Length: 55
Image (tube, rainbow, N blue to C red):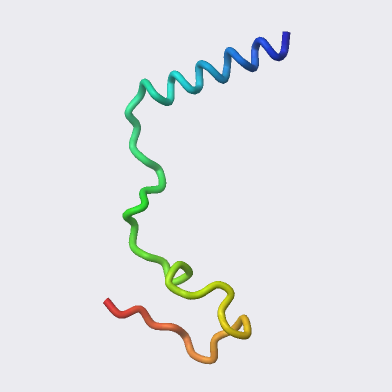
């Protein structure tokens, strides 16, 4: 019984997500974060100077 309800909920959620046109909550075109510009992990895991972003 629980499996049947789970499958029906899953199908409803999938159908509803494809049928509605909602805005994206986390767009990929946001301003770039400094975390994504630096190598991971940074050398020695710390900075001797703060990194700067040049536009």
